[in-house]
Structures are given as structure tokens and as C-alpha cells.
Length: 479
Ligand SMILES: [Zn+2]
Image (cartoon, rainbow, N blue to C red):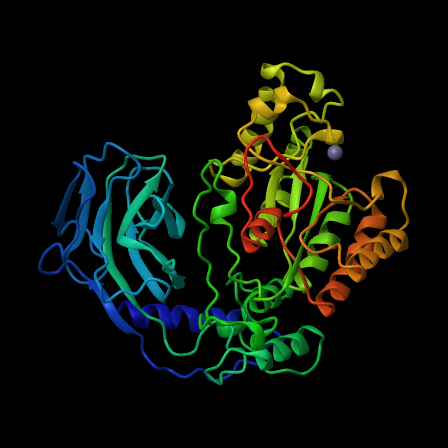
């Protein structure tokens, strides 16, 4: 029932957004249900996470006569939960869906979430929706990968900043149908042919393509972001040694202080790559398109980079930061006011510069994390080292963009480093505030890709090379 509704919904989306896209006929193999809870005869294995009440109710129903009613919630995270048993494989991708209803009189953000154990306990969102009062809303994610290595996995439903009562119905979890995101040509393999077909389509050639498999991030559009997400796993399939062939809209686990290098996702970096961390200071910048150009140049190659944001500039261009995060780039801290004397400030001053920028980034992204810090003017002191709980990526190679280097001079400097073997593992200092930098990055990204380099974030580069970073220390490279 739920399946059928979703299939119909998705087909109408296909039709609605189908301008310029030739929809292929999609094989209609049904998913294999592992979880299907309608609450018609009981609570179907669901129980409370805490002391809240979770009971079957005939007051409301999305399907059938009954739903699950949750009340007396003392916390946002209180809600119905069910353990995912051994039939669910960590690392495998599933389709999840549930219907929720609340009548608090206000719109409430509701989340279908997963709790699991890895190195610590994680709480991640599978699907999130704003749920208006008195309206059933379906939370769904047709392609959610349970993180590899996850154990003690619990599916649950919660709210953000509300303790309202709510109803849940039609909870389902199933193996996705056999065509998958990324299988652009529907041959049941995800490989270079899919990349090529998507690229042809984006280049305006008359390629047959559909939202069903090509819209990797499910935003209803097919663009370079989808190409990037596809390439993330399949840039060099012959060098890609794992068998994981799905990309997902997985929420990243929250980064715990001091653990960013452990939680960075490096699964997309092909084995045997040389890595370099291009890093960009002084954004976000409003009214200029340099950052957009840098974003697109990176994304076109499936690359990532680290962006160190200047606190007082954040409120004028929050979308740029959200976009960076969405593309898998690393958001980082360049202090609140970019003082030229941070090395002369006392611990309170240093902490305030750090915390105000961190808090602003957390607010924009709706998370609670620490971020790597690039020290303004690279000025360092023992007070800074002893005060801040994070490492300081510095400048292994200085692009010189800040001192007026031309685009070609920047390109040449990086190419020379690549050719003499000194680029691998380096943190490259750049700024997103110059036309010359954007032009150089547009030229460098395809060149680096062709020469066996992967441009990645600072955290990814360190993790990929099995190098740790420690709080209070300056890092010019992995070595
Ligand atoms: Zn700066």
C-alpha cells in the first residue's frame, strides 16, 4: 500500500519534472520488505525510547484503522523505536518510509532517525520534514545506506525542538528495487558508462536519461552535482576496490571534537591516489561568483576542499556555506573577526575568536561540531596552542594569490610541485576572494585529475594517508 503510493508519487514527479528529459521505462521490480508496520493488530514491535507513552490508537490512521500514538514526551528525542535485527546489513542501502501526524497547532520538524554504535553512539537522520499541524506527512528516503560497521541499530521517530504528541503509521523498510541511483543507463551496473551518459546529457547531447537514477541527490534536477556524486564513487572504477556501488543522501555523523580526521569519509578516494588539500580562506563572499566557480570546478571532478570562513562575513552569505557542506566540502573556522594580532591575545580573546565563529557555523548548518582552524595571517602562539581544542592546517604550499600572483603563476606553482613530487599530501593555502584563484582552480582541477591527484579536504587527506592531527598543532602537510 505504502509502496504503491510512493511509486505513484515518484512517477508523477518524473512527469512533472520531465521537461527536456526522456524518461526511460523503469523496471518495476518491487522492493523486498523487511519492515512493514501498519499497527492494525498491535504496536508491531515498536516501543518507547524513554518514559513516553507509545500505544496503538484508532483516533487517526494513514492506512487502515489504526496508528501508533506517542504522548507524554519529555524530550525531543522521545518517540517510538524498533531494533533492526540481523536481517539488516550494515553497509547495505535500504528504502525507508513512515507517515507522521501531529496536531499541536504549529509546524513541527519531524525526523526518521537511526541510532547505532560504532566507535561511539551515533544519531543520524534518515529523513526530515516540516510537518504542518493536522496533516499526514510521509518521511521517506528511498536510498539510505546503513553505515558500514554499525551495530545495535535502532530506527526511531523524533521531533526537533518540540515535545508535542504525534501519530505514526505505515512504517516501512525494504531493499530498494534493483535499479539504483547512479545506474543511469539501467544496465544494473554502475560504471564508467553511466558517468559517460550523464556527462553527455549535461553537455547537451541527445542522451536518454531519467530522474529516477540520474538525480543522485534527489533535488528534482540533473546537474553537475549529480555528476560529482556519481564520480565520487566511480572516477576510476578499475582502481576502486570495494564493491559498494550506491551513493546515498546519508546525513554525516556529527563530528565530535578532535575526531574530524576519524569521521571524514574517504570511501570516495580511489586507492593509490595522490592527495592534495586545496584550502580557501576569507569567505563567504557576497556579490562575487568566485566561490561558485571554485565550487563548480571542484565538483565537476568529484573533488572536495576545505573552506575556512571568516565569522563576521557569515551572516551575509549563509547559503554559500550550506552549499559547501552539501557538496561534501569541509566547512572550517577562520576566527570571528580575523584579527591581525591573535598571537598577542590572551586565552580569553583567543577563545572568543574561535567560539563565536564556531557557533555561527553551527547555527548556519544546524549542527554542533568543532571545526579545524586556519589562523589569520598564520600567526601562532603558545597561548593559541594551549587554548584551542583543534588542529591548525597551515600552508605547505602558498598559492601566493593574496600577494597578487596571476592565475597562470598559481597554476604553474602547483603543476611544478606535482611534477617534482612535492605536492602529494600538502595543504595548499588559497583564498576564495580572488578572480585569479577561481581561474587557477578551474584550470588545475582537470589537470590534477588527469595526473592522478585527488583534491580532498584537509581532514580527508590526513585520514586517507593514515596521519593523525592533534589539537594545538600546526600542519603544513601530512608528512
Ligand atoms: Zn584570512
